[in-house]
Length: 192
Image: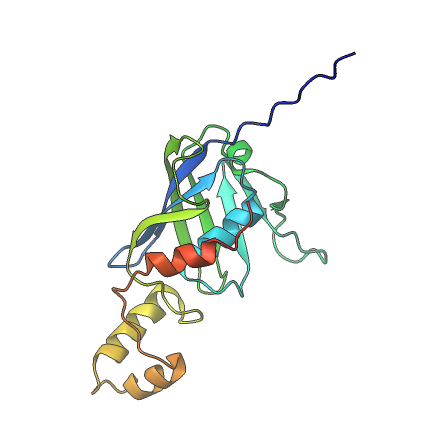
């Protein structure tokens, strides 16, 4: 008797996502490619790296009227669906836009749009950052208003908060910098 040959499973299609940090001028955005079967937990890691966040705060996805995140075992906060095994394509239910909130204190609200579907072999690596603009605000800067104050203070050596903001941040900050090559080096470590 001849054993049936199992063909390899075809690679999943890819989704080109446009991620934009809302309420910030000039606009901070990234275009990343991920497999449609990426879990929301892994997508969280991709967004953190692509945007430049450090991952030290809570986050939540809002997709098709459902909230996804890491459920609190002690029941604090609003209930969320577990993100660990939910795939992006299933969560989307045919929709093209969704939201990602990072750091409930600073409220970094991201609007994410599925730009298009790509064939499985369309990118040199997956996940992959194709493009973007501007640096991510520093963690714990105080949300949009705090970021505006931070930029004003570091740009003006005569500003009353200049020295303390420069010391707090600990290095030079250029809000126009976008480092695609560095992002893609870090994305190589994300297993999808």
